[in-house]
Amino acid sequence: MSRRTRSKATALWGTGGGPRADVLRYTAGDDAIWDARLLRWDVLGSLGHVEGLAASGLLSRAAAARLRLALRDALRAVDRGRLRIEAGHEDAHTAVELWITKRLGEDGLRLHTGRSRNDQIACDLRLHIKDRLLALHDDTSALVSALLAFAAKHRTALWPGFTHGRRAMPSSAGAWAAAFADGLLVTLAGLPAVWARVDRSPLGSGAGYGVPLPLDREATARALGFTTVEHMPATVQNGRGKLEAAVLSFCSELAHEVSRLACDAIALSGEDTGFLVIPPELCTGSSLMPHKRNPDVFELTRARATLVDTALVAVLQLKSKLHGGYNRDVQFLKPPLLGGIDTTSVMLQMTAAVLPSLAVNRARGLAALDAGTLSTDEALRRAEAGIPFRTAYRDVASAIARGEAFARPAPSEILRRRTSTGGLGNLGLSTLRERLARERRWARASRAHFDSAMRRLAG
Image 1 (cartoon, rainbow, N blue to C red):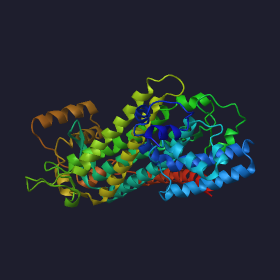
Image 2 (cartoon, rainbow, N blue to C red):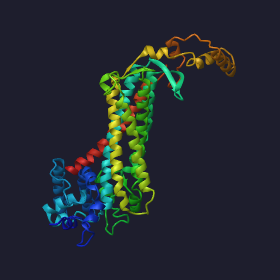
Image 3 (cartoon, rainbow, N blue to C red):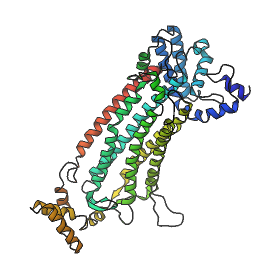
Image 4 (cartoon, rainbow, N blue to C red):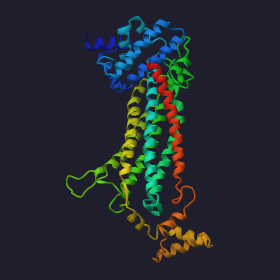
């Protein structure tokens, strides 16, 4: 069979005519590579579709049972590498339907009843996204936990805080780590809103205008573990790109938090600061300079955040120029979506893996608390004694200009004077741990519901 003939024969939309082989290759592009990651979800989505067809009376009980068994066998074949996208398969949908039809004949030909590849791929992606969002939640929670452990260990290790890249006021290694834990928790708190947008079944929307069949869309949604259906069929296709952008925006927030941590780790561990110590096993060397110990792991973490932003921008650009309804352009949403999620995940995992190995040079941090860094403490000490703050501020500024030094408070005094919520002497790590526990409870419940639905379908 020629490549041209084979391509037409294995296209689900093929009716005997169609474009040339080179046009088919151009339109398919590398879609099969990305679809290979969705193959398992395509089988599970088909199992849910069978349940919906059966509930709608559009499949006999016997046909539904045969399709159910065949699809479960297909799922095992995917897991074992026996069912995959072959040369000539246009996409995951083709691979699965042909595999089923080869074994069931006429019953296999019934599988696509009331379904378009458009709502089929939307379902595959939503199932995949749900799984990956929960994995990202786990990755983020692990990093938050590592940050809180670091904060507790170095709670009293003082060093300067910085604004504009210049020394500002006393801070601590504990406050530094706790702030990133807090920032990640704030981002995690927004995940349920993203999840609610993904947790809506698109099946039954067809190509965007529904289908002239009495489909029980709610039964399909329940079978697949979705909370509800995407109410308007057109919303499924009009939302392509919108959903991906929401997911990647969440990823971008996480990536920015981790990137800023990486930037700080680079700056705070340099020879001119040395407050943080990156051990040799986390560094690379130079082929020329024997003394070099380079923080490549943090530099490449910083760079990866740019890749996540690039993925988000690609999705925003792709979706911004489309007519209502389905457009083939959305085929190119898959690479930035899947790649952006992957990049975010490895950033979180690597940062959590290396953080416990970082050390703190307490002596260098404390020595860097010079008169300028302590000027605010001095001004506020005078204000507490009854001098108007603005007067105290100007007096301290004049003293600094004259080169006068202030008596340095003891580290315990610096901590004691900062007891408001989140202050150096009151980091509130227990509160952060409670927030992390709440986030983990949400993730466990969501994972249990999702996995339970997938296990029921898989038999």
